[in-house]
Image 1 (cartoon, rainbow, N blue to C red):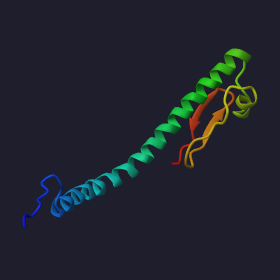
Image 2: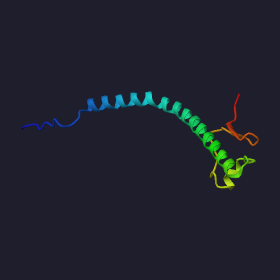
Image 3: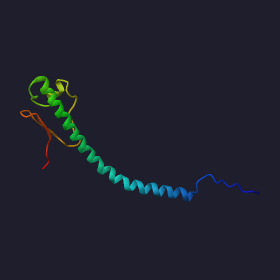
Image 4: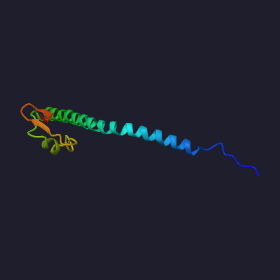
Amino acid sequence: MRMLKNDKGFTLIEMMIVLVVISILLLALIPNMTKNQSIASDKGCEATVELVQAQVMAYKIDDGNYPQDLKVLNTEGYSDEIVCQGNAVIEYDPTTGEVSLESND
């Protein structure tokens, strides 16, 4: 009786080696992804502040004065919602028109 030999497939050892390599790569990447998520969130808040600053300047160009608070930008149609992810708070000074993130020092 002749034995059929299939040379096209993977052996169990080869599959185990591939799974070990993938596991090692995932263990190396997961901590980096969680660290980069907080950096991306910070960059997103900085971009939101710059966008709100541009909206304040557009309001001043149209109206001649700075808005009294950021809610005016929503009611006048300059923005939909002004929100930063996490616990970051956007501060606004109506006398100078400056928009900034609240410092946590």
